[in-house]
Image (cartoon, rainbow, N blue to C red; front, side, top):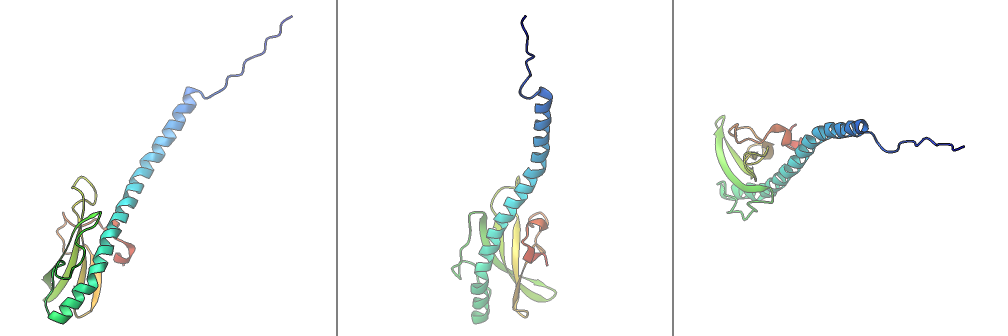
Amino acid sequence: MKQYMKKIPTGFTIVELMVVVAVIGVLASIAIPIYRDYIDRGKVSEAMQLLSGVRIPLQEYLIERGTWPSIETVGAKGQGKYTTSIVSGKYVKDSKNVYYAEATMRGDSSTSIGGKKVRMIYLPGARDWDCTVEDIDANEALDYRYLPSACKD
């Protein structure tokens, strides 16, 4: 008499594979935007580092000569890997001169930070710098969520 052994199926069923693919899809749809924001915040930190590097030369020039210089005048670095340009300027707010250094992010308008701007402003009376996106055209200002935590205080 022959005995037949039942063959036990091995591997995954199509339903199990579909569940795994669905779970991976959901996780990816949550993780990818968070990762992109993290990368963009890192790019903005390069702009903030460049702006921090021009603060002292600009401030010293103003104190010594009484005029606000351009970035080229003080010999500062005018761009970076993720920053197309660093410029300086002045405007009047509440009858006080506000001096600034401004960074423009590299990229086109299809990216969340491409072409957006962030500023470090200097008030001579306070002798202090502050990073901001205020007083920048709303279409050109960097979204608040990309600013470093020191700028959000």
